[in-house]
Length: 205
Image 1 (tube, rainbow, N blue to C red):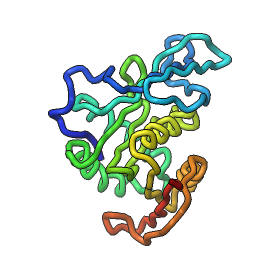
Image 2: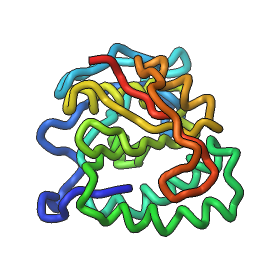
Image 3: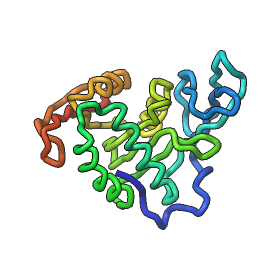
Image 4: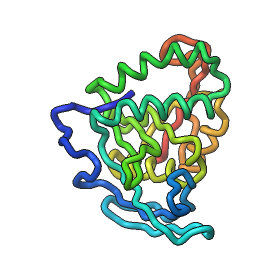
């Protein structure tokens, strides 16, 4: 799960051409409050969001991943999986961890990161063509509109998307259904042959 060709990454990976910039509100000095939902941005568009508790804004960027993100993405993956994939044991998580680390350095997937203006990673996703291979958010930023922003960005890049969702994660299924995906198939085992059924979902064209 992560990283496109290293040769394509610039030394400075915070602000890249084509990145999405989103204004969101946070309490002063705190970068873990979720932003309120806002209209889906188009590439390069700025959208203002505001929380009732504060008028202080920070920028959220969707950009391509770079090598310096790897450690933060692994850490976010661990926190996200432990918070949302409650059907997994710690032994299961440790089984998948080296596979995630390996994918983070592969050239097979196109990876995008959503980060704050302080370059704190809030979420990330991986694409293979129009297949959304992975998407994870910091647990403190769930239900804040960031997942929809990532999905919208992917659709703007690739058109109608497909995604596989763990059947034992009903919240993920509900999220993707809210984004327009429908279930078109089911597999009894996951891609590693483990007994974690997958729902195959896709968006209408």
